[in-house]
Image (cartoon, rainbow, N blue to C red; front, side, top):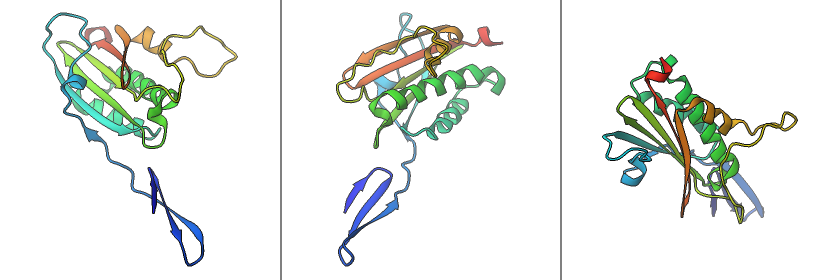
Length: 181
């Protein structure tokens, strides 16, 4: 038996053919890694609380990420709209442009509450093959579809940035609660 994420392929030796069946999707997992739970420190020694969820790199998992964010922040839905929109954009970028979107890939999303603001970190599994990934705001090109996700983050977040590490890239943003009222 050969197992691929999402599909189980078995060889039926009596008829010498493949039989494909869908595997159960993996449920979201929590991470206890303190490095993932820590905020990107834009200030010195800040108090914070954090929560991390690891989900499969599939488009439908974006809804799981949004529900997780809503369950962790104490903002009303209307106040949280920017958090949800920007987190969805970064999640979709991770599964579109990195190994996180390949079969078996994962995306880690951290929600960190810091005083009167929330920081969201989306951690991917790094670039595909020998590609170089450097998330950045691209120049506007009206004839090219896409490419607006980080522009949206740059205009709606109070702070944002990227951190490259051995296992991938973290793209993060912060939204101040007072700025969204």
